[in-house]
Length: 303
Image (cartoon, rainbow, N blue to C red; front, side, top):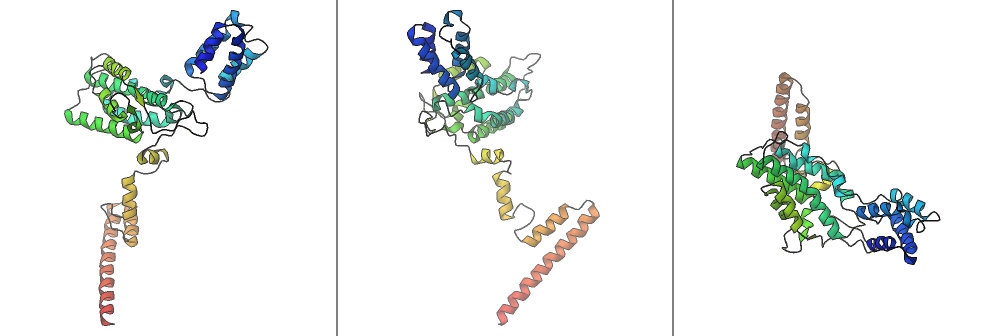
């Protein structure tokens, strides 16, 4: 809709003024796409359209383009610096970190789900390009090829897959093949050259059918983030650590509160002598607990 308004203003004539007014409303609502914002700014500079933007309309439109709600940011402005990474094994962590920071702006509720799906895959592409560049060449002064052993490469790809899954890429679907976003991203990582990454990206046509449609004023784009990603966002420990805490079976002590307390005391010991003394205390406490349990059993049997 906004693109047609831009064309109407470009054409001039009696409808141009009404179209420019509608563009002002769209700019204030923050629904103009980055490319449309750039086009409108060019139109504002055209002398032949001065009458269209007269009476303060041009000034108001210029202010709205830079004010009000934050405009939809281009994906290239949100991508981190994968090109600065020299070890391909560090790229999954770098991708996860950058996406956590930018995800709220990357998946914008003002955009249709399929466009947000495109933006997510486009965000990932530079990290795939850098991985291919570092592991498959060609080598250069700033990009030495790191030939990962097969087991290291497999491990790195699994880390990428986990980061992609936790970030909701499994909700993306290629309309043509039915492959999900994790599979599509894995195909990008398996490219032979960075150019092949870009070619594969241009061939996919993704959507996110599970997301709400923002064209409904009561709806917003929702990205179901994996529990692991939610814990990261809340700075909570991983689920396995929470499970260990709940069960008390972390490989060191059982679930008994006294045992856990004694273990914490031992962890606070600074010297080997202190730890040895606490070890003896823990052993004595264990024997005492066994004695109490035996006595309680005997007492119950005699009642």
